[in-house]
Image (tube, rainbow, N blue to C red; front, side):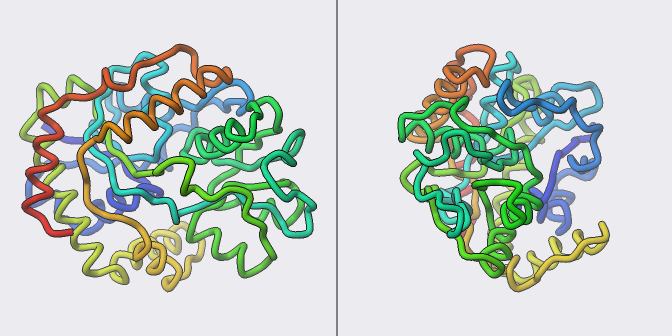
Length: 315
């Protein structure tokens, strides 16, 4: 059986695993599906809903079997009625990004964003961060003008004046910090833990347990390798950017990887509480089509496997 793994640079762990060959030691027949090369989904107005690319392709015939993303996509999938289950989560990534404006903009806090253009990579963790920040200040989603921007282009749009605020992430945020004076409106810390996470179809978990256990094992080993070899891991991202006609800074990628948690942990009650609160907010603000219970997406035996593999691997 061919196991299909969806990957892209935003999930650092799977991106490195794609290139270092560790998974192939356990599963000889692996097909890597570059999410950037999938057919683009219909555009979604960020005031009206959430894009469903990740969960759609998880359930498409010929799509992928396993995926790692940020905080929001599994909520989106569950809200669309997809029968998916969590595999595991990373540690908190609260240093990875934040909501910023230009110092010269006159925007000093979240309350000042009413009616303003806020750039987000819509459907990612950035949507959740913006919504949680608004809710904390008594605002709703329709109090701002959300603008869907590519994760790599939002900083330039902010500097040009096309955006009033932007949820930025490293290493791209470092480039903007070097080019402009920024004001932090909201740090990720204090809002939510912002982990990476991994999920699969329930059918895959139940019918292909050995393959899922092999993926978990390889990911734990690969993450330990990243921790021990951050500069070599950073080279994969730089080489990828250059192959695609762009550029990337090796030092900034290395710094970004050094600042991120690696290793897959078990799904915790605290994480599920964060997911549930976010799902409730997304629904209340018209971005999720139905209410969900995120604990329906937990299979206890997966957590036992994750913990066993984590205990056997030093990260």
